[in-house]
Length: 405
Image (cartoon, rainbow, N blue to C red):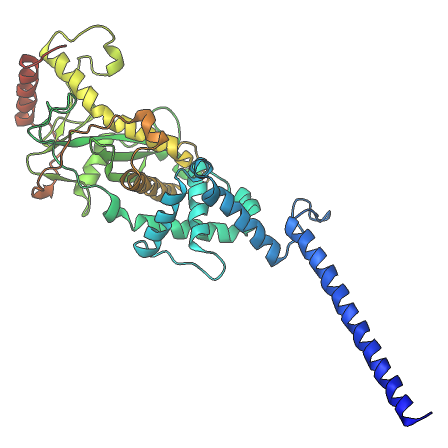
């Protein structure tokens, strides 16, 4: 065989080997592509692990992003159903928590996923196990994300807890025109908790439920001013208020101003209560008009003070976690209640009224902010003769100047 023929045969074998290697590589790429597409579609389940898919990092990331896109980015209505705010407001909340709340993403979890985890939990009282399945995360990751966002929301307290403005002298609103210099209303509500067995007697309220007493103070425009959570359900409302007044950063009162309270509190300086022994609750009136100055005062007082009942109704309707008992400790529940109030103010400030608030809210458009006044620590909780005289004079003036009953 000549040298030329030997070179041709060697070259031919090299070409054939190269073509064979190329075809093998193409076959491998096709098989891997088909396999990857099947994994991404998430159609095959591992029979030994039951509901858990044949996970890889790619599968978990794909499912997680798909779930977040559906819940927070695709439909505004669906986003409101899932996290109680629309897509734009969710994005704004993530920015505020990152900039002002100090929330930072971790190596594996982004800020939007952490915020979604928190909002989903408080909106629907979602369990950790359910979020593990939806987000393809471990229970520890879900818990860490929840508490990181909780701390970040608490840091927004000074920014979104509103500073009250007294009712101006030229107010014409039918509810508030009789209460000049009033800052709003305050009252207590109960949140069910699950304390330890040895602590249950302290948390048992008068309805024999295990609950936590929460003091809420709000403005006429349904915005929280101050929240104190953590007291046991057996504690009286006046005791909780006294604690709020004596705390270093507690509830304060501008000089000459007051809040509206129910009959469970003492009629003391800074806190105006209704007359006892007279009809007070709005449902007690029906078609019967008030016949005395005290009854007329109580009716107007109840109409204005009802703002605190409405804001508690909005809060519990929006955040299911404070409407139903959870397995969080009472200390954690207290922080969650404060965070829910801060988020309520955030939604009210950034978005205004939504479908939750429209059920309760009757916003008064003629309330104007007045000049800031000097702030001092609130007064004592003992009944005050001067304040009783102030209430009597106000009741007489309201009765004499009434236009219609």
